[in-house]
Length: 398
Image (cartoon, rainbow, N blue to C red; front, side):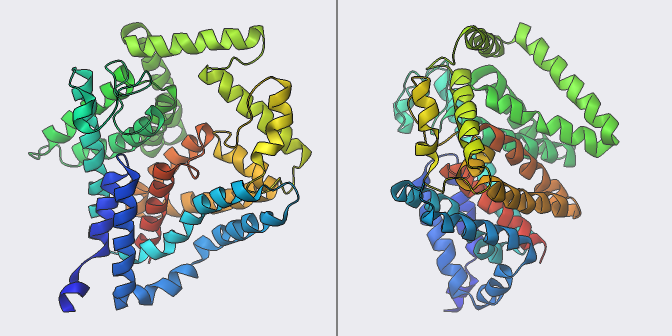
């Protein structure tokens, strides 16, 4: 029994974090093991009840309770409700996993597990780019991924690029923290490979927009509002230069311009990313305006937007690929307001602690922007990543 109690749940959380950019099944397995050892360990169980009472999580409990009540909305679809409830229900794991992340060493082990997973995906991406058969990695090449023109490996390019941006931030920090260390060259190499992978190899403008958080964060941290403005201008200048010098950037921006021209000439085009985003935006916003206060319920998105997609001869959808729009349609202004109170407090509090200011705040900001471009609480990998980040924040503030 003593040996069992010496096993740290954080080890299993590190393994789960490693598989976040790879496959969901191992993530669930290692999460289950972490939970088992959290409930076995007396010291973890003692923290559990207190964690559920933490004031930082009060808005989260209000949000989840309200969203659960939307089952009784007349516009709610019970079958879709169950799917969304399970997605948002992952957030209940935050105070449980935080029990295992009180020590800084344990939190950093989990972070290193994640970075190791991203590094593996990065190397496999280069292997596919160089012509190695993706079947060797258990991946099937398609027109959208795992090919030399878009060498994502296990995940779609949005997830691939999103996690890559987070890893880039931590590799920058590691290289700056240990400039004369024998590992500095390793971190710098990973950083350069990741930057070229992000901008020069992988499809997806979303990753570039999310990446902009990093220079803005560093600019503000170093020089305040002046640094924020300078960093923004420098990033735009570099992106313009990349448009003329980097083939992948030129292709993706040119495609975006073409899609915008098509959009302005007529209606949003099916099969184009910008056309789809515009349809998600306009249909969801129109639906929201009809039920602005309380929305349509967790399972009511598809039926709510259907009149507007049908009028435009588009198929209906249940995910507007924008987490804030998702909340507006599902729970109206009430749901979005409570969520932003929860999130805003996380950002504010993480900025007041030396450790979380470096390790949590920038990741929260990346998620804040990413949620404008996708519904990350609906997606498994990004959703579980957010749970681990908030659990680490909660553990750091015990």
